[in-house]
Image 1 (cartoon, rainbow, N blue to C red):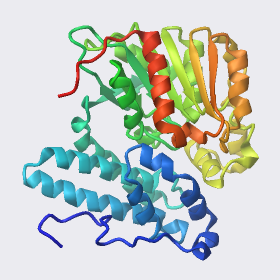
Image 2 (image 1 turned 180 degrees about the horizontal axis):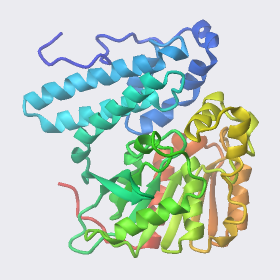
Image 3 (image 1 turned 90 degrees about the vertical axis):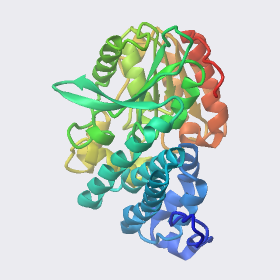
Image 4 (image 1 turned 90 degrees about the horizontal axis):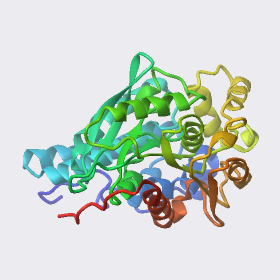
Length: 384
């Protein structure tokens, strides 16, 4: 290798070919990951070649966490060397890549709790070292909630003196605040601050708090926290959520009218409606993060994640964004929410997948522009 050593994901060390079709058929969980997760990983900050090269080393689901850990460790090595050489921009970017790789290592890996927890700890530790290198920087903050704190990242763009409006961001069932930072950049570049937080059952909070169906309590806690910040205008607040976080966004909009506008991306109207069609990993993750004993209990819990009786309360503007080919949450659930919520409008992309990661730029630009139109931010100055 040359003097500038690269992480293990570099093409000089990693095979270029994917697993054989025989290997993929042997483990349906790995096959599902290979078939569906590439766009999500790539559009949330992970190099697509890291995805393909890591999967090329995995033939059984039990290897998933370990092999993504190998990818993460390669970036940790690169980050440490860059720090030692005084190349902080490179170091922070590598730390963020390492943090995301550790996140992918553990995000739906529930077969080995000890291995999953270790990967989680390294995901948090790596990403926090790289967060100041984002533009605008991400500040790790703690949101008071029910006698404890919800970890979050706050990003505040420069707006020439006027306080920016702020968007509270809710991850989904298996996502975390770190994974939301690419999307947060779309809001920040349009003059909006963002607060992405790990709510109950998510990221840093998942080991202390189970999933909370009444997520409006989290939304209210976030707004109360932001009201005390001197660098944002909490009177112009928006709410955003993706996947199960889309449900959370709608709940927050229904019960706290301090939110001026919201975007609900790929969220369910009621989570048990498509239960039998959900991937096994999704059902297992819900069971694990809701503290349910078995699949039947998890199904019953999923029925509590419902907008029945809440959708009609959403009178502020809500953009419901969904993919017509969503295999996780059927489009009919988005259509039902849009029909019942008085403030809702529907943006359906006919060939879109779950979370619209196959239309990431177009969809994120559209809902960020929509949010900017409703929160009226001052445009930030040009970068540089």
